[in-house]
Length: 324
Ligand SMILES: [Zn+2]
Image 1 (tube, rainbow, N blue to C red):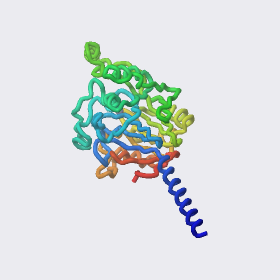
Image 2: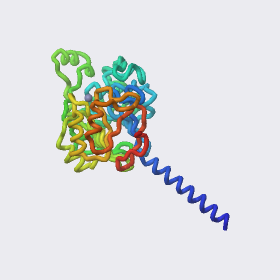
Image 3: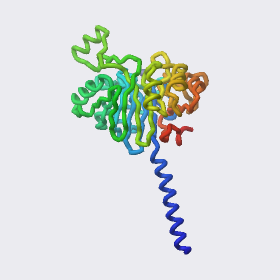
Image 4: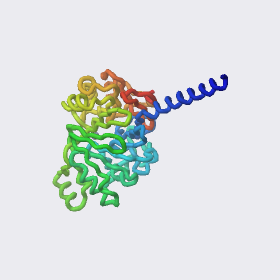
C-alpha cells in the first residue's frame, strides 16, 4: 500500500510539473532590441515576438538592431515592416549593440541600398510579411541579393496569412509611406532624389498577430487615431495586447495614444513604443516624459520596453513574467 501511494504521489507530482511547464510554454515572449540594455531610448522600435511554438518574429528592426550580425537576434523566421521610413525599415543601424548612448546612439553604419530589414532577412532566410504594395519591393531586394523572392509575402488589409503557426493581418495606419530614392539607386534614384519625389509603395500599415496561445496583438505602426482601431482592431479582431506608438509629431502622441487605448481598442495591456525620447534612466521611467504621461493616462497596465528584458504574455494579454 505504502509503495502504491508513493507511486501515485510521484505520478501526481509529475502531472503538476507538466502542467506548470505547459502553462509557461503557452506564453508569448516579447523582447525589445533597443539602443541600450535596460533602457527605453529615442530610436527604439524593434521587438522580437516568440510564439509558444518557437516561431520568432522581428517587428520593425529600425536602427537599434546592429545589423544581421547582432547576436541578440538569434533565429528569426518572420520580419514585419509597418512602413518604409528609415527609422522602421532601417536605413542605418547601431555599430554594435549598445553603441553610443541612449540619447546619441552610434548609428553610423549605413544599410543602404538594402535596408537593415532586408539584410537581416537575407542572413536569417526569414520571410518578410508586409501589406499594401510593399511586397514587390522586398521581393526585388531579396532576389537582387541571392535570396528567394518567394520569401516576401503579402498580407493585404482585409485578409490574413498564416506563417509559422501565427496568423498575420495588416490594418490601416494613417501616415505616409514614401520610399526614399536611396533604396532605389541608379539614375532613376538620382533623378527622383533631385526632384524630391519618393517611390510609391502604397499605404503605411499596422498589424494584428494571432499567436498559437490565442493572444491577439495589435501593432499600431506609425498612425494617427483611426476609426478602424474601434471597428476592426477591437470590433473584429478583439486585440488584447497593443504595441502603441506614442511619440507625437509623426504619429499619435501620449494623449491621442491614450484615447486609442482607453476608448477604441480597449485591450488588457499595452507596450509603449516609438516615444522618440530618453524615457528611462536605470530602467525607471523619467517623470515628465511622454512615456510617463501615457502611463498616467491609460487605464490598463502599460509595459515599458526595456531593451533586452523579455516579457511573457498569456492568451489574455496579461503579463505573467518580466514586466517588473
Ligand atoms: Zn516612425
